[in-house]
Image (cartoon, rainbow, N blue to C red; front, side):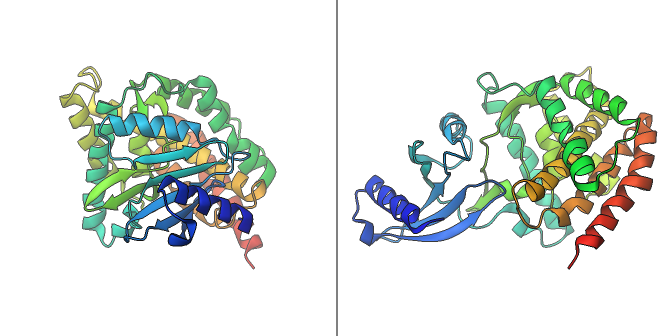
Length: 336
């Protein structure tokens, strides 16, 4: 980030607080896989705010602002947006601290505890936020996401073809996703996007929210980047969500617990394939570092999910016998 842009960001943040720029300080507060950057603004009285720098040439912050205002008004735990300058890509937000949920994963009991709390937050989102105004997570979008896998992971990184079983899996995963009830979907409900502030969970990075399948945020959480649950633990946590959704009417009594678990496995397979493609794209196109090292973790998630879809055993065998060795070999070759 250039010094000129930092100066502009500082002046704008000071203006929003009716202060002389010399009376405030900005310190780096992290970044993410996008082109956004975050700074902690310290005011003369010691209070802090977060300034988001989202260069408009690379990032459209309008959805974040629109959704953020709507969800905040609905009483959902999201950062308050104090000001937004979309032309320059500057936003002024609540400071939710520096503790993402994964920092609390100190032992297995804590992991279960916080995942249960986060499942409750998903229920809160689905019950309070109408999906009506959100973009549809339709067949076209599901297909585009799935196609990131053959394009970026297989073709551009591994330079291998997909197996003949790919098309049947792709079609089935899209069909199963569209069969589910439509709710507000955060779309990246991973521990890194859940901040803990005064013992309450808050959602951030919701700019890609859509109207989509009820299980999507569940599997984003349970098949996230910081933990791998056993099959029994996954089923137990998914069942906890299922029973709550049944009790408050988000899921029909016609849908059995076993069928919902299968839907979760299918949705998780879709997301794992998408993530494998995205991480390769972040590396090859955007020159981001560290994402290839995470591929084996999501490969584990993919295999776990395919174990719950026995009709796709051919693709599962290909993943085990061809994809995994190819990824591990390529990672070994790129290791310095």
